[in-house]
Image 1 (cartoon, rainbow, N blue to C red):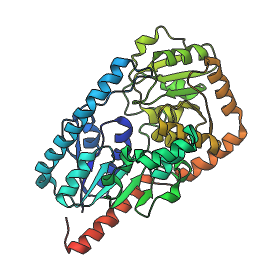
Image 2 (image 1 turned 90 degrees about the horizontal axis):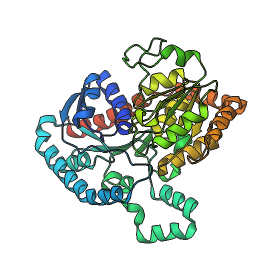
Image 3 (image 1 turned 30 degrees about the vertical axis):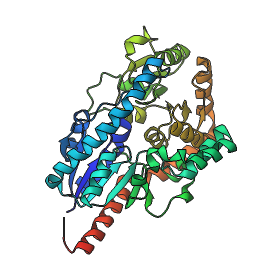
Image 4 (image 1 turned 180 degrees about the horizontal axis):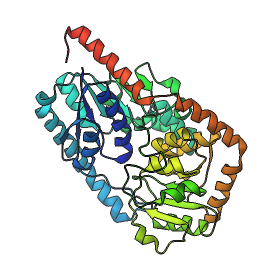
Length: 402
């Protein structure tokens, strides 16, 4: 048995893949300790982890149209973030004897986990919930959007180093790196050394996908979702969309053959007003169970959603917003599994795009192939194998067990 300490970052998209890894490690009878804020503690306890709750400032969604006041508050919070990182590092160092882990797995955004591991002299593994970042990846993105001259300036002045994935601690200091992606979605894969393991998808099997939605108390009409042509719409929980976007989608699909399930995240469904009879809106839904039953996916292109859509073989209409989402969406479209539509497009364009991806036999064949291939992958097991090998190497060096 090995004792692992996991340091996730408190956002849904970061916690979900870490829970999948934690469940696999617990299933192998390892001791798994987790340090996370209270809103995300229970999901780790449910899979058998020992959780230490720490006070991490909640990260809210980034408005689609931020006001000047919102931007100003974000600038003011930068100093608060630095102070929080220092406080959390000190708290973890003080608590270290409680855990005494052999290996630490830290989200690249949870820098406190990395700093505490370094202070204790314990090997740490960087955890990427989306594709891994290298200077080459970042410069390619700048070159594509701003031109070669901008990329040259970024490289010359070292601007790329502000990216969390390029911090010295995250890259040079990591013994290993676990990346929640597959080759089709990893840019410039050849730019990463042997420490990087592209193990994705890090996902657990959907609960309650036997037709009954067992385990969910949500009042969704599960029988209708499974029986009727249905579309699941989710724009993530961080760089999400506002009420205008969801209202536009609702109006566009009103009266069509599609049953539309909207996951509105930070938008209260009440802000959308009365909805058409074939449109359902909830702030949060059990995504795996809903997507399992739906026929298509209108997605922001976040890594977890992209991997789930591929694994379940769902044609995708993509409306990315953040930089990594744009790259993932571009790669999904290039792979032939969906189309990218600008969010500002008129509503009918989304209906047309959905009809296009549903009727395209090339997309169907590609999805069937990728889904079958991903069905043979076991991301959590692959990640756990990397960690177990690292732990064994450590025991051989130390001549003992931890």
